[in-house]
Image (cartoon, rainbow, N blue to C red):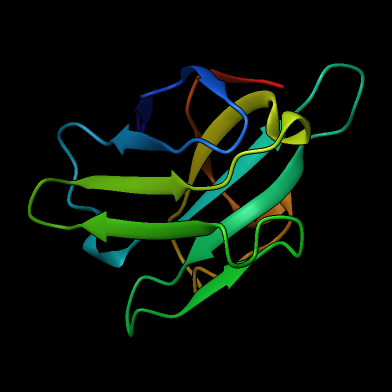
Length: 125
């Protein structure tokens, strides 16, 4: 079973930046598509960003486009999500996800096979 462990969440002021990390211990993630989702209180889990397993292709939700960057370090088996110009509406639990097959640019939950436990991001205004 693939285990994902997020870190890097916390409290940040509006306009600030944050980098979330996703470790995949014991696995080689070079063939995994990686994604980030988030869930705000009382809302459905929503797509944030995706990174294909090859070619460096990315896809972002409109709500974060231009403010977020998803990346991976295959040597360290980690994926990251950098968020800039944070807004109060970015407050949510952020989840890392891995797609073990396909192109890895999935934008819905069912495109992914493994999930982390989530890390809280709170943006104060």
